[in-house]
Image 1 (tube, rainbow, N blue to C red):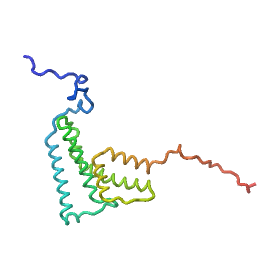
Image 2 (image 1 turned 90 degrees about the vertical axis):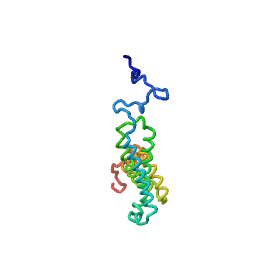
Image 3 (image 1 turned 60 degrees about the horizontal axis):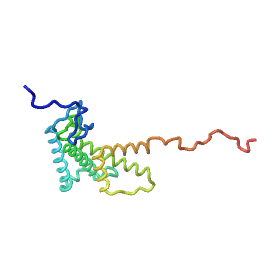
Image 4 (image 1 turned 60 degrees about the vertical axis):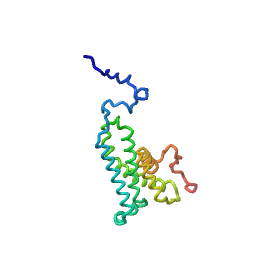
Length: 195
């Protein structure tokens, strides 16, 4: 009896739905692609509910909002929420873009992405403040909306957070390149009176 479906072509001759050769994103050699598990989507929906509920509670119920500090140093407290919202947005984008080419190795990333976004958004804002103070003599004060947008963007894009931390290390922690610093001769010379 003959099989109704043809065997899959070898990996190197397979093509994507667009007709081109398989890209590294499409190929899943050691971690097979599957349809997204329902619980990953359920956790993402739970994060949506939690973040919306926290936003409503913080904005509408004074007793809830007064429980939290207004600022974290120079940063508004709401930057934590905006970082988490950025992390949730990139997670939802991944869920919708890859729901039929899901890699199970990303499950935990999606579970914790809003938490990571909150950390990266908040810490990224603090790093930005440090870099701004190190680079300028005049320290302009930014309003809360600026830090909210910055926290959201850094929570959304991990690469931007990493670039900001790299910039901090290169600016403040690492010593300057010594090849560009003029060399000073430190050998003692005799003074004119020493004769």
